[in-house]
Amino acid sequence: MEEKKENGLSNTGNFIHMYVQEDLEGKLNKIHTRFPPEPNGYLHIGHAKSICLNFGIAKLYGGKCNLRFDDTNPTKEDTEYVESIKEDVKWLGFDWEDRLYFASSYFEKYYEVAVKLIQEGKAFVCDLTAEEMKEYRGTLNTPGKESPYRNRSVEENLDLFERMKKGEFPDGAKTLRAKIDMASPNINMRDPVLYRIAHATHHTTGDAWCIYPMYDFAHPLEDAIEGITHSICTMEFEDHRPLYDWVVKEAGFTTNPPRQIEFARLGLTNTVMSKRKLRALVEEGLVDGWDDPRMPTISGLRRRGFTPESIRDFCERIGVSKANSVVDSGLLEYCIRDDLKTKAKVVMAILHPLKLVITNYPEGQIELMDIENNPENPELGTRQVPFTKNLYIEQEDFMEEPVKKFFRLAPGKEVRLKGAYFVTCTDVIKDENGNIIEVHCTYDPETKSGSGFTGRKVKGTLHWVSADHCIQTTARLYDYMMLDNPESGDMIMNPNSLEVIEDCYIEPAIEEAKPGDKYQFMRNGYFCVDTKDTTENHMVFNRIVSLKSSFKLK
Image (cartoon, one colour):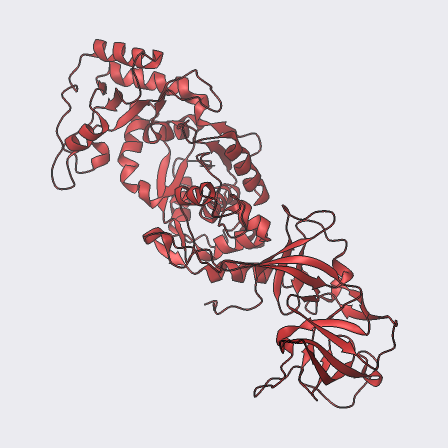
């Protein structure tokens, strides 16, 4: 069971598993899936669900999963996206071994199938424009009209298609269409376009082709050529399934043809789940690239500090269904908290510093306080934190006129400093504008943590850092990127999605931290050393998630 959960598939009772199990009990003796992204952008958390599903099912049933790039649209695709997708799949923990494929590798085969369809009278070259084709298509309630070019002879169609291939016609002048049924109740079967003209350089084939197959034509052929048994895709392709099956059959793949199965795509609250909209955010400079830690891209989540284990756990928890729904983003945050709670070392970091001076502490004295690295995981051991006369505490941990049930520091009030001593506030120092810039305290040397002190009790414990030995860093605090559900309307960015704190003071335990290392900042959340902007001389920390959330796991 642990192995199944590791692959995001501990629940084998969903409908996809039922189909797979049913097929294995029939004619099939193997499972072969594929993850087929189009390299026109970076992958996001919705793709992670598909990756876990396709690779996970293959591994669970002893089969194989291909990584295949559906690169049939040269105007939007780039090798940058190819490399980023490969990195994301590997980072999530999946391996395509020697099964890396490109749709463009089959361009010659697609062309052969298209010629076969023309020869059999099942495809024709059409001169209608895109607007005219839309008019001829009809509606959900009315049948379409046949193109005036539908009855061209086989010879004329073969000649025109060959000339299309040679580049004799401009973009949009002609298309190759399947000859199926303009009265079909399924609009996708009303003589769909199979090929269009595009004089564009392809990232793998260069200028070898100026005609490119449509996705609905190429995709089923790719699956059939590679011997895919289960073509798992999202619900928007359910109405395309009859065309998928038609292409596979007419191309001659009749022995154990691939079975298309649809599932609901992932929707997340306050999150953009459209590559087109994500691309717009990048191109308009509203975010710091595809890997901005606010982005739901896998690279953005990785840079923010999410772990592959937390994302696989998330994909496992949301499950698979046919009903579209929107998942609370809090569940993703719950998964990373659950993963890091026993893994991450806890350190003291002050995000909004207030200086605290212990007036009766010896000038120049340094004590090394032994503090546990993670109270929930004793195996992570302890560390020594320097304690001195001058400290920093959080501004919110002091109140000159405390409200009811405020158990932290206030004039005349005593609190414990984490892992150190009891201190009592004796004075407050203000600037000329009346702002508090410093608090003075006295300490009780008999109250040192670990000394066996059993005297008076205090309700408040504060974290702190030595003002003389801390490390100054930058901290970035993130909130949801969107104010609403952008899939249902306009994108409205949250103006508070990013807060930058330039002077964050952290204990010296993080001095050797490397980009990507993760910590819990005591009471402030889980943070990750930024992999992009951290330099040799200055660390930048991204807050992965706060320590608490209003989200409740059901």
